[in-house]
Length: 308
Ligand code: HMG
Ligand code: MG
Image 1: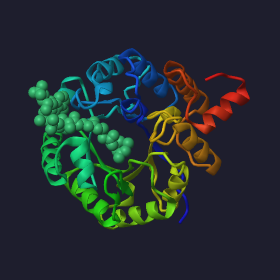
Image 2: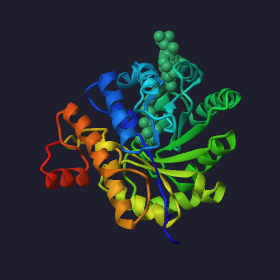
Image 3: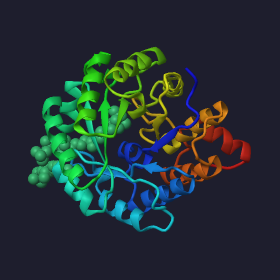
């Protein structure tokens, strides 16, 4: 199959990336990062989560971040700024802060569901149905995530059919797009393709997105394998945020710069400007006191003589 001519990138660095960083990044820096990502042409930027601050203290200021972003002249109205909402309480708080798009997050693994959101997969789907109903009453689009689509840190390999079942439930519930999360980055191209093929039987390919963490350096290969099947939406994090690349068990998302480099090489349009993206990458890397995890960013900055 011909590769897609255009790809949409969903920038998840300010949420998935920063939720996993050991240091808590202040709201002002998170807003500065999101403004720079807007400058780079990202059209969807996940800005935070309305989850329990006991569970994820890094995302505690998400109301403040969302309000500031919505009020910033640099954050164009055409950009969408979804936030994660695990339950009605989070949804109400997100709406109060001005959210116009939300995301719910289920898992294909029972153990991961328990560890992540403290309930079974079935119970989570009930909670999410309530969020989707509330959102649909306000005409708020809802994106659905499925975690552990290839493997679970507690249960090991996950069967593609299990992923497809949860994806289908979220889709039928009313999610406009289902993002397939290789949470621990254990996927390799063949396994990822088998998983996508199972999902594409129960819902249209153009409603599926790939969300690959890069723990084993396989994410770019997995994106290419997904493009081959016609997938055209991918989640990524500027600078490969999320977990220090030098620490054991680090699980950052695939870096936006690496994905953009791949897409440019393939002649696939994404509307993103690499030079402006590198500004965002340097900005957050400088704040974190380290180089971007992105190989493309490091190579391009070195060529330019810039320091991250
Ligand atoms: P729980 O403890 O079972 O919830 O947590 P609860 O209903 O019993 O409430 C306990 C306390 O939390 C109460 O406060 C609630 O009010 C409060 P207390 O009365 O004790 O003071 N609470 C909340 N506070 C703020 N916002 C809320 C909220 N809800 C309850 N929305 C809960 C259940 C879901 C809340 C918790 O487990 C949680 O917050 N989990 C979030 C975990 C998380 O954010 N994980 C990361 C995102 S998922 C991800 O990264 C994967 C993804 O990237 C894809 C991939 O890579 O696979 C998307
Ligand atoms: Mg993730």
